[in-house]
Amino acid sequence: MLTALSIRDVVLIEALDLEFGAGLGVLTGETGAGKSILLDALGLALGARGESGLVRQGAAQAVVTASFAMPAPGGAVANLMAQNGLDLEPGEPLLIRRIVKSDGGSRGFVNDQPASAGLLRELAPHLVEIHGQHDDRGLLNPRGHRALLDAFARLETGAVAIAHRAWREAEGALAVARAEQDVAERDREWLEHVVTELRTLAPEEGEEEELAGRRATMQRGEKIAEDLHAVSELLDGSDGGLSQLRQAARILERIADGHAALAEALVAIDRAINEGSAAQDSLALAADALAFDPAALEADEARLFELRGLARKHRIQPDALPAFLAEMEARLERVQGGGAGIARLELAVEESHRAYRDAARKLSEARSIAATRLDLAVMTELKPLKLDAARFQTVVEQLDESLWSPAGMDRVEFEVSTNPGAPFAPLIKIASGGELSRFILAMKVALAEEGGAATLIFDEIDRGVGGAVASAIGDRLARLAGTAQVLVVTHSPQVAARGTRHLLIAKSHDGTVTRTGVTPLDSGERREEIARMLSGAEITDEARAQAERLLEPA
Image (cartoon, rainbow, N blue to C red; front, side, top):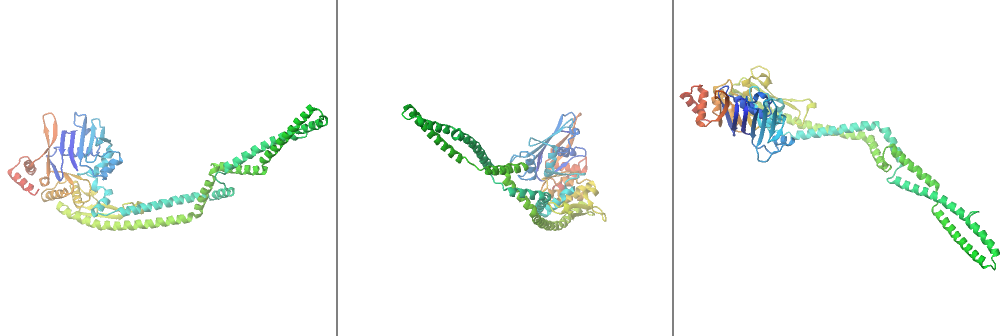
């Protein structure tokens, strides 16, 4: 609900602060007093185009601030603010401020946080509906008619939305599976070759490290064996040390008898021979321990080279080959069994499509029944509004399947025929300005419980009518104000008399500057204003008496 409007330096308004309440608020004043300026100012705060012509002459900028009651948590306004990173303090009103500079530049703020004009326009339909002579939004926008009909009939569309999501998800899964199958079929021959090659090799995790370790050990053993053989030749070869020592011992044995020094030398040589023999035995043991099978080395090397070669081929590490084999086997299995999987997905699509279609058809039938009730409700309102020759119908048509949505399979549009025998057409295309406003009022009354914007503004809805029709308009505006805040700019005393709050818009001139001002009227002032509306410039006693009679029901 709009609670306050502050205007600074907009056209003829220098400074104006207005407060609004619930119920029906009426704005009156002589023609040209500036009633449209108030609506232009409010429109500016709600994202209308900011033009330098709106800035009061001589001022640097125009500023409009609109205050609204705290938005409901989780509602459309709160969600829009959250999506755009704007804070909403619990318990605080919603303040929308728009500044337009004299050079045409503009800035917007929501609760003192910068906001684009585009965001203000997104917020606007959830806060205020302005219905004027040339209104092309709200009830006149066919894109919103389906939601309005659903709200009128209190139809739940959640089951249809869930069914639609399940259908689309099934279609998506089928499309992915088919695409994968197409790619896989192209790769079938390659997959079969890869799997065969990997299965033949049968790689094991950690195998490369084990093979490389054994190969290194055997290569080191081969080099040590060569060195041991060389040492053995030096010790016990035909020209080796032990052979030479044995020859020396045999000579000494022949000549050492009775010669102490030679005997000692022989003993020393014998010890050397024994030590050398022991060394020879140790070398033999070491050679046996380091012995290896050259064929085993060759086999391990061949296996290692195969593993590394296949890993390079597939650009992975050797240890990743077992996992790669499992992946390729799975892909090949999907190719070989893909037909069955796709058949299951096709069945899921068929079943989810049927479920959506059934749910959407039930919703469509309910909409058709509700459309008849809505048509009757609107037609009931047309006759008192001097539109008794007009007809109203709600068209519910099934859309092409490509346009089916979470909201169902229907196109819903409100159409009218303003003259007997004339074809039905969209309201905006065939209704005149005065008719248009009254059609909108009739529809708003019929849809009073549909939960649209909390504030409704009607601009001169009573233009061109008077008497009983004006009274009927006032009565319906008052009824509508029971479910929403309603503001109406009016020239009709019958409408003005039904208001719960009355604002008088007037111009003043101090000799140099013309200003527009707004004055809240008390009960006595209201009688005088309504009398003026009845009689013109000169207010008569008869007009005052008639004003009293008009005010009595209110």
